[in-house]
Image 1 (cartoon, helix red, strand yellow):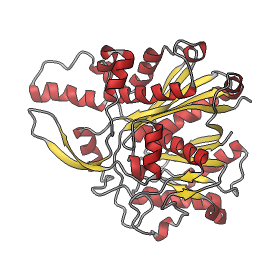
Image 2: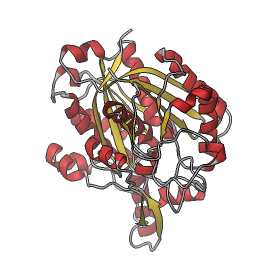
Image 3: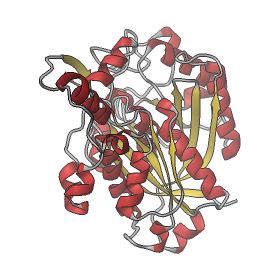
Image 4: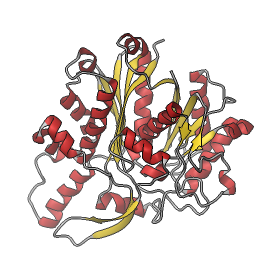
Length: 407
């Protein structure tokens, strides 16, 4: 069976405009969360203030310089964020534009929300301004598969183009499926990842109505936590058949040795610890990795009361007393909940931790919650793990677990 290795990584988030910036920010315990004013757009007077995690840098100038202004202006923000992360990942992998390897690659990309800016612009144009119709590019801008299609067009990728939409597990599921494409030899190179750009007036109002958003900070597993903080951005990984990667002398960041995905079949918004534990256990079996081995665990860690307690129960069920030998990180405290991009972003940072031998701290931790007793990384910490587990537990009961190991 072919093995899937990771040869390229790229990201854009509230922690920075690329992998190096994001990693330095995460290690230093910085958070991108800040209070911002979000407007519904003139002439509407509707505005709101919220704690969110916006980008630190505008990706558009670099994209315009690389691809020209027209294709960048033709798509929604979430498509451009995917392009920025993918440009970095492809360059990191050393894949030349127009090369056979890149041209024949597949794309499996995740998104939780569709083009929120395009949707709200269309509604504003018709229902506030009174225009007869929305912008003619509204449909191709808002469709959830737009980032995948846009990556194909920009980079000349002609293989399978598949979009995964499974809420906050979207990019994790994209990685799972990309790994299986490599294993089954249906593809030899796969671009995987996820994107989201939901920091819009309507997007934030919707999450506020759900009462899942904190007005203070995202504090995973902490006493006194009161919700998550929405972020935006994208993260991309380049997966390759190990034989191909080694034959071309590619640098291998990590190997995806195990993966699992399942469904709770229980509730739309309340997580199920039993199903989450089963996904983690299956990923261990798939990787041939004992649950007794010390691990770096990159938790889903949203900072909501229900999710963190459910995730704690799942981890304690799987690892038992051996959990004490693991190190648990929760990076949403820094980059915010990036929704469709979260799983890929968290796996990317876990890989950086394995490579550097350091784990980033949970930001803003207030103290222990008796129902969330875990070996949390609360300050920059040296680690010596050879493997990491990254988990994603999404609305709708969609679960994913990924095991990566150093090459």
